[in-house]
Length: 288
Image (tube, rainbow, N blue to C red):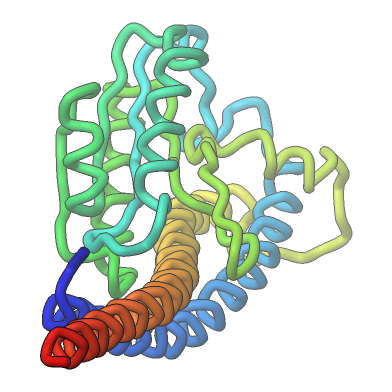
């Protein structure tokens, strides 16, 4: 049985751990609220932007813009993976890497070549052994920046237009709630399916200046860049929510261990006192 000193050291260590996890929970809570506001605003903006693209796409002619051209053969794919640079956020990163592996073992087999762009240390470490990474960014996931999203978006568009890839995908954790972040695969290029569906192929009585084609060619690159930025915001909100939940759970577990070890320490102390009393009584009896 551990000594009283060992119990005291363990309890003190657990109290320090509980303080750290509680502090991290509070920090993540503050960051989560800001990230959630940004993520909600980005969803609203994305819905409005898709509506505009849909109306314009419904009136395009037989020759679509380069970013909307569908290849006859889809054998080459570029996948951009968003994860977090830091840990202590439960299964946030591990679940995403497992999702990538599952996709590669399933639908990914239909492609002859798949390359990756990673946006964090955790994504890079999880994918470097299972796929070819053409570009990796680090220390950018914690604070989503449109400049970084634009850099990735322009690179993806350049390679797509050049014919290096037939399709471009995003894999990231969609923020569903504070307790749920769902790994998701989203096709970014070519931009046809969702835009055409929302446009319904109908003429709408709007007057456009400049023309629909020019306006669509102007908006499509910005829409792609915003898709990457939106994924950044979704991932950041999910990361802070996951870390908040993980640290809350860790704090609760630390308090339970403190209570358990306090009880064990008290039992050990009582046992020690009982032993000492027994020895005193036995010594007194022996002197009689």
